[in-house]
Length: 437
Length: 83
Image (tube, rainbow over all chains, first blue to last red; front, side, top):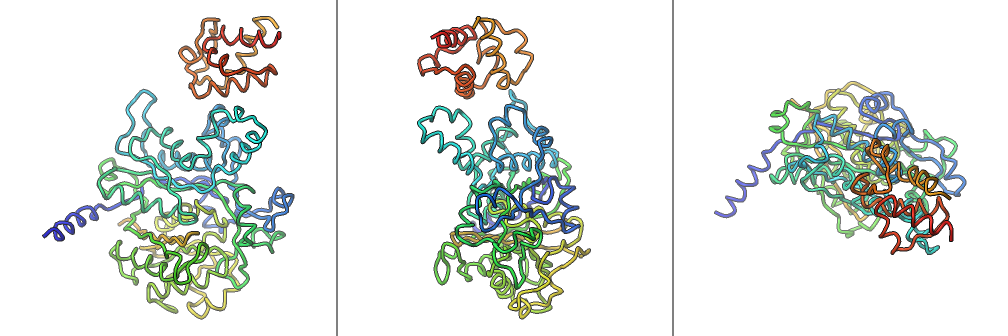
């Protein structure tokens, strides 16, 4: 009896259709939705050689950094805000979040008005405050702690980005930051869906950000997981799915999505980009081959299958996959486990691509930026190219024909795209996006 | 430094922290930094750092707590500049 009631309750909640009504993006190859869509269609690379990384003797001296100008900064921040918000990731996150909120046609309460109690923010971050912490450390060590002033904490605390967005937009529901390494952005979307479906919020601004620069990227460089061989060819450096992939290219940026129920979107006459059917997060537990840095492949398969179950779709419904595909030796293993999870092989396999081929691996922000790209592709019915994989990895060729990986932009009939992200700590996430009918 | 010179320099230091710029037009010795200029209280510590650097002085915690009105700030700065 109790079980039955629980399942009725679950059905009621799960029946809430979740739609995306606003988006914003600050990516290495474009800022703002309109230019980002153009960049995707052009296959525009955002990877550049950074002399700062050469001077610091980094192995990988190329990276993806959003082309943020002073002019654009002044458009979003007052001089006082620019004085107190210097962490690039927090700037990216605020710009993307504000863009998404405005794009959704939502208003911002005035300073003396009530906050919007029904709207919240679950916005992920990784090492957004790294440079600020570094600068602070010098002052602290010299006995000048006083000089940190009031701006250090709101930039270096993990929840810095959600705290800034919540205040700026006057959000009165849950305002928090999630963190699950490179799975963060995708996870934030799933956490937002959960909160809305539980009836605890009407809408959530979700997404993620990460800062640019050596203090964020150094640890990865030291682990030798980045590409150290393409410093003279930045645009060729991020090579997901290729035989010559030998490390990821670090990136940075932010993306934001406004999620709400279909009813709420209809009620306020909002523009709807697309629907999110559901998804799944899990961990491989760092068992059966899984470690801090390598996945337990069983966890990946279960995550993808869990996402399909939550979304109530069959494997055959998936038209394309926005892979995690970072440009490492793990790419062929990822493709193999997509084949296994979907039980679709060879020519029957969906399209698969990696946006990281254009923008590098934007770490915590990756899943959010890639999800915005998915929504744009569903809305405008095209596939952007997966660059730099002319020399497909032989293990991948054994699994799927080359034609399943778009080498050029092409119009495509797309109804459902699956997006996965995997992160250090053996954590996984997978979201199922659908074109709105 | 004269009181006027210090007041003028102080005005340029606090200017970035005042969001409603028109409030800066009518600065008097009695002007309260938080009440009248609507400066965020968290920014007081930033203003103190800026003052210390601009005048090359040190403001201890007791003095910092007394810096509520423009006249307090000016006299605290004046004492230290002349010291």
